[in-house]
Image (cartoon, rainbow, N blue to C red; front, side):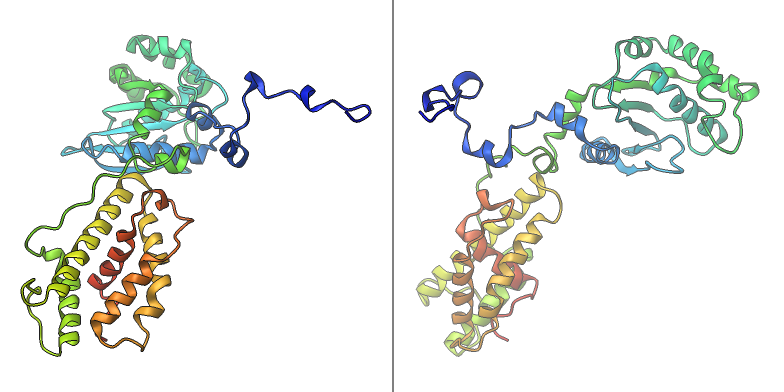
Length: 361
């Protein structure tokens, strides 16, 4: 023991006596999603709500973010499938649960602008806040008449000068009649935990909160007959085989005639469908563009091989290019934990399908 210092036995362990795991040293202590959303900026909160609402495609035909100047009191607007009805998701990112004073002006805006004819009265108007609605507001929202009375009582304080900067909006005449006759049962607040759970099923969740990708479903098996979606890369393979054999090849090689080419053709189709399966998996679990980033890495890794001059024929070019793809060390991509070797060679056939690579230049 050094003078004035503790011995190793005296150094305290973390709470509970547990040794810090290595992933915690890299990323820090995990923050639960319910706490993480409180750290969002107001803009990030609106984007988070947009991601969730936009995933409700069975409910909505169109989802738009209107937040910002000129939004007329609307943040995320969703139009019901097959009708002109719409719902508004009003985003409030405060450091406290919503109070009635936080919403009076918002109610005034939607009533004023719908009465004026800027838009129709919404089907539902839902407040979304990271700390939800407070007890007093929840109690008010359980009674449409109490909510209406509360707005009328508080109009002059929150709405008279707060709705628009162009002038006062007194609650009188036709507007008062409109407020008295409107359905206040459309107003509600959604608990944040319910939003997080629904967001968990979107392609955006892992990118925002981490936690790793779900298990990848098995790759699609190629159908016996070439699908129209395969026509171009299959055509390129047949050109490569013809270049190798010195004769035109118009049909997939038969095992009895060219067993090696037949096995190669089968593997190429399996690789292509594996890469297509990965594309679908990325579409369902990650934000747009992630699979294209992976394709970009593969293309950069194989393009010099694919366009090089040292290949005996098109078949040799295919084999050299796909072999180079399989050897690529993909380590820094979001899909790396779900990437198979055959995906990388399958991506080369995706390039051939799009004519980004040519086996017989």
